[in-house]
Length: 291
Ligand code: SF4
Image (tube, rainbow, N blue to C red; front, side, top):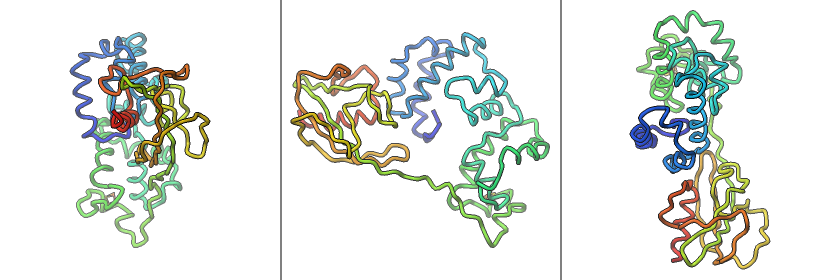
């Protein structure tokens, strides 16, 4: 849940999940539809699907335990290099470092060398005995994450109170390296076409090709430079929406219609029992103003 998502956003979802599912087995037996509904609003919906798929494997193949090798962990849905190493450290107390932007930044500053000039795998391997000189590897993994988030922050690191400032080359150097991990924000323009009916319903399809919500329920959505041939669309509103590193400029169109294309299904504009991504809910809100 915490992947690319702030703690304060995750907390209510985390409590909701642990309240609903008293153990992993119960969770694994839940339908994907219900999990998606519970996850609604948290974004990055693939995580929910992967979590469910992984829970089924853990129940079936591993007797509800998390595997202890990197190779086995990597085979679980949604588990990449970073997560596999985090789990090995956090859960199994193994000497490992999950290399993410935080860790890269910390080492890069300690050495005052730009990130892309550092071979992190080699660095960790050659300094293994020094780095993992502890029996508390799980705390070490956690500490690195916290250290990057609270002390050696991307902007304005708290060098004066940092325990490592004695040895940190960035702190001591008069020629400090520049960070190269500024997040690139992309601007995109989309036209969205909504079929609606007099019963306050909107037609959605999972057959859309937009990368950020692929195969999620959406009205027809096209990049603004692509022309949609359908006729009689009325302009409703222009608004902005941000998703991850995307700034979206949206033009919303609508049409009252009884007929909808084959891949579409009607959904109520309010009171839906099915999972609807937040992006689509915002469209619901705009379209509801027509009634
Ligand atoms: S002294 Fe400053 S730059 Fe160096 S590790 Fe500490 S917080 Fe980061």
